Image 1: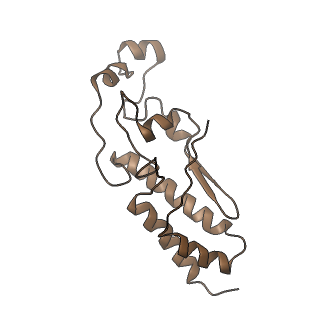
Image 2: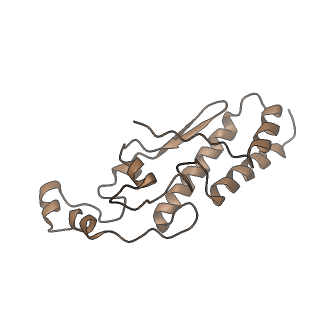
Length: 160
């Protein structure tokens, strides 16, 4: 089941409205936005930080115990893993992608358990990747600024 977060950011709306008045097909813009957001998400994974720049919390003991470390019970059962947070076997980040259309862009993971990382659970701390606040859909400052920069760059181009 895919996760859907609709972006209703009032700071971005005026920029997108101006651009929409100039272009009937925003596909190139949406492609650029999707690419930038995907790169930002991959950078957050590499730095182990959420969209607001906060360091992810440490692993719980139960999580460490369940990971397939070389020689562990889990590794003997499931094969050795990569041993990194959010990358037990690499399938979640291998499934990160975006799609875009004339007026929208969608980004996410093809693994349903990605939602646990985005929202957290009773037993697992949130490891935000997509949004600063998944309940409101608010983007982190870097993501919002990336979108504004892209839209402003398109707005600065001569009208065809």
